[in-house]
Length: 551
Image 1 (cartoon, rainbow, N blue to C red):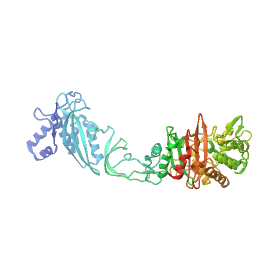
Image 2: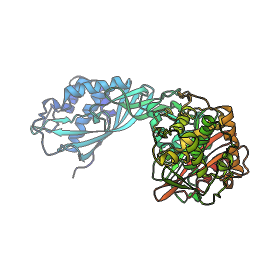
Image 3: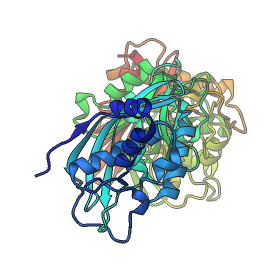
Image 4: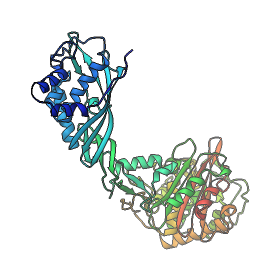
C-alpha cells in the first residue's frame, strides 16, 4: 500500500536560490529526472500513447508535482506546461488563469500524495493548497493533480482545467475583481422596495417569471473570484471579497397584505379546498396581493370559472346604462322561471317576491329577477351581446398584460350566446367565465368610478376602457353593494365593516358548486374563489373578510 508523502515547496525554492555552479545544476537535474537512475524523468519525454497501467510511486508523483508547481508559481509557464501531457493546451490555460485573476503571487503548500486516483486510471493523485494574491484580495483553495507514467519511464501531470481549480470545465475560466453578470441575481421585492417576495409561497412562480422578464434597477456589484463561461457570463461565485447589493425589481405588492392573503386562503373554514384571491388598489389598479392554495395552480389569476351571481354587478350596470332602469325598477323574484326552454331557479333561502325591485333582488341575489329583466331589456331579436359589450366597454374586459411576463387567463362573456345561455349569462352561468383577478377589478371599477387595468409592476402600461362608467351607474351599484354587505347575502361575514360593498356568488359546476365573493372598502377591492364552496358567503366570505380587515 502506498503511504502518503508530504514535502513542502518553500524549502526547495530556497535551495535553488542559494546553491550555485555545478551544485545548482545537479539539484535542478535531479528534480527534472535527467540525472542518475532511480529519479523520475521529465514529462518532455512522456509518451501519452503508452501510459502505464501502474500508478507512479507516491514519491515520484510528489517530486514531479513539486517541479510543476514551482514553475507555475514563478510564472515560468512554458516550463510548467512542459511537465504535463498536453503542453500546448496547458500553457494557454495557465496564461488565462494569470490574466483572468490578475495574478500577483502564487504559492503552494501541503503537497501530498493520496494514492491511486479514483478518476484518472493509472494515475497517482497529489493534493496541495493554493494561495493566490489576485485582484481584490487573497484566495486560498485546495487543488489536486493526477500524475501519469509512460511505459518507458517518464512522468507527466495529466492536464485538464481541474488543475487550475477543482471541477473547472473545459469551456470555463476564472476571473477576479468585479463579479460578472450572472454571479448575483436580482431580487423581486414588494412596493416597500425591500421585502423579498420569494418568501411568499403563492408568488414563487410569479417571482421567477418577473425576474426573467423585467429590468432590475440599482444594486452594486461585489468583488471576488468567479467561474465564467466561454461568453464571460458568471457561472458560480467562488470567493467574495466585498459584498455587492443585488439589483431589485419593485412590484406593486403590499408585503403586509400579501401575508394576510397567504393565510386567508388557508382559513380552516375552507377545509383545504382550492382557493384563490386578489386584492387591488381601486384608485390605481395596482395588484396589492394575490394568493392561492390547493392543487389547481394559481387560481387567483388563472382559475377560469363561472362567477355565479357576482356577474349581477355587470348585469345591473347593463340594465342601468342600456335600458335606463334604476335600482327601484321592478324585478319580480319568482321561485323559478323558464327562458329559452330552460328552467332556472333560485338558491335555497331566496324567497319569492313578485314586487321586488332590482336593488332588492340584488341584495338577496335572486336569479329569476335578473334573468327576467335581462332577457326582457337586453336581448333583442335573438341578439344577446349587450352583457358582453358592457363588460368590454365599461369594465375593461379583454387581454390584459399585468407586467413582468406574468400570464393571466382572460375572462369570457361571449357576444354570440344562444339558447338557454342567453339567460344564464345574466347570473354568471352558461358560457360566462371569470377569474378572481377580473372580479376584483369589477368591484374596483365600481368603487373607483372608472376602470384601472390591474398591473403588478409600477409604470406598466394599463389598457383603458372605451367608455368610462357613469357616476350615476357607479352610484347605483355602490348603494346596492353596500346593502349586500350590511343586510344581504354577504352580511354574515362583512356586516359591521365600515365602507364595505360586496356581492356574493355561488356557481354550479358539474356535481358541485364554487363559492365567490367580491367586495371593496375605502382602500382595496378584492375577490375570492373557493372551488367546492357551498356558498359564496360561507367559503369565499372568510377569505375576503381577512383581506378587508387586514387580519
